[in-house]
Image 1: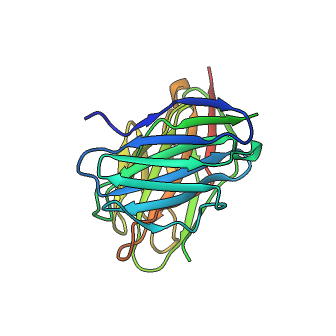
Image 2 (image 1 turned 45 degrees about the vertical axis):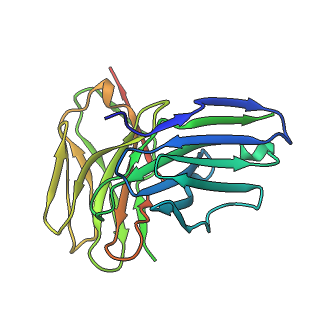
Length: 114
Length: 113
């Protein structure tokens, strides 16, 4: 089992640039979640998908953030334009649908916006 | 709505000390309860879970019992090791609807030799 795979692991870029974070879920998992983790705000749910369909994006902070899941094997989180306050660790997590099953997290992307 | 309250950290213990990290929750219905652990530079990983009242979840020497009467799910370990140093998150999910998980704010544990 390869687990949830995120790329890149680290991203450093300048303010105003477009940033794309990628996630490959565990095969067979039908839920996918994007989280952001910072010291100040802890772990925040940004958006989640069920069977590739966005269900709840109420946690997306601004229109600069967008997420897609074109198929069951791939999801992206895009920030355009990026700002220094977007600096955080972004996690993707996936889950098989039964409610008492746990979420499986990737190792995250550490994003620094200069 | 659902909420999870964890004790403030950081918690600093000497090796072989007894650990308790408190967690209480508010939820509608009958939630499943989880403890996740996050080691430095990694994502969260499931430590243990309990799905109904009086269930005890256990793993790697850690235990937590689902107490519906006190709406609590405290994490315990009899003898901590330096390798247990991490951040611990209590979480819940209620059945029905969509599969959002409510996480606590996390409690950092530091074990010193």
